Length: 318
Image (tube, rainbow, N blue to C red; front, side, top):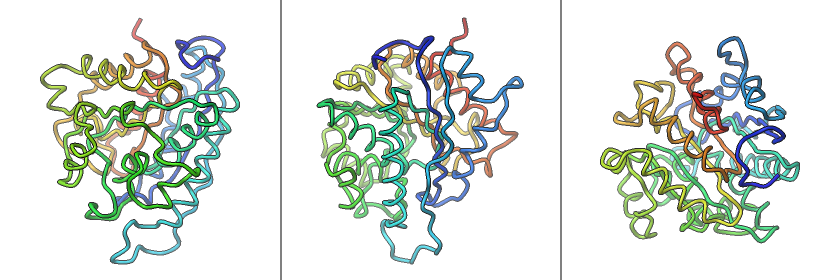
């Protein structure tokens, strides 16, 4: 399978769950994995709908998550580092195996700290083949904090910084190399709630032109911003990964997340973004994170997450 093939018959999709929620301050995102896996839309589960798109589908179950058996200490920053590091090693190994099996990973999260493991695994797989990974990161937040700039110590606010080589040495050094990403191949879409330290980091790392904020989307439209993000990420020789935090969407359409911020993308803008990515081709993996069934209303966020997965895999209206 060539990574830049369009969706179609004969391609393999491996669905894998990562029920890790201790990277966030709000419990419940770890429950999003089974909620998405077991949700039914029009009488079918997610894997059935993926199969209807022409894919061979394999549900690989869940990655082993090493859960804390204690409360975080008052000054712990980052929180639950040992457990996160062990879990990310398992996550990375699982992603590398999926890619070795010539499948497209569809990753059900979990909070956004899982991206440290997933993206590290994909980047390591490509590095062994002398290729680089691009990335499109959909999120209301920059996720580019470090322990020095984080007010909470929650690792789900640090994954992008970690992947770019900034933060805790153990997490940064996962898979034995750093950074995992060349920033010139990394695009961020949907930001509207950044900490002061994150704003400084975006400018200091010269990433402003790679960040397409909600203000940019308001001015230029989602399609133009996503096309620019694709232009950035698709220049990487090994294709690009997509990671999608549901809090990128306005809470009116996706209330089931722990870090809601008003003023996000609409239901249709979110679908348009992923439909555009599927049409372009080149996506190596797709993950969706921060779905919290404990905070959802009538299961609409869970169902939306499943719908977005299908759009990323090529589902169209006609």
